[in-house]
Image 1 (cartoon, rainbow, N blue to C red):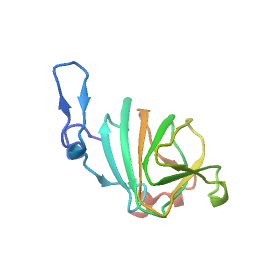
Image 2 (cartoon, rainbow, N blue to C red):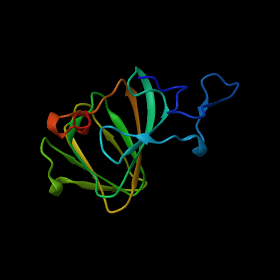
Image 3 (cartoon, rainbow, N blue to C red):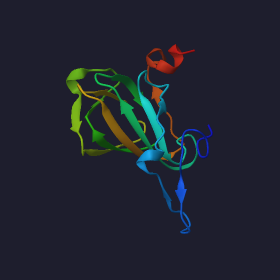
Image 4 (tube, helix red, strand yellow):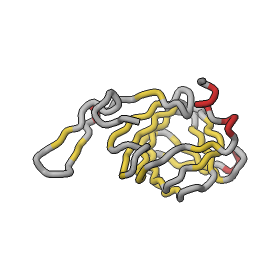
Length: 149
């Protein structure tokens, strides 16, 4: 999936220092995230579908539930705004959700079944990882991407 240079990253600012890249707030381009209706994604650096480091932000409305899934690589999450909730297991269970308020950081190991939710306000998270990465729902019927076909 092409990311750099397309509509997903508006302005990658480069300087004479090799390897330095910056993304300013005005450069962030939010696009619909097919894995969850009403959710938007901004790819800040790299490409989650290709080998190498990447940074993405995810903006979610209030009261979103994301059914159990895994990722093939470890990910580091930072909660920028709102409240992000995380639970472990193969079945969605609201009683198992732990809340992470804005400013929280956690590292999720690869291939761990988990589920997530937002609280009563919009939530923005940032994810750092090394690709390629995917979101693999444990129950294919829970995958919103299948429902959009």
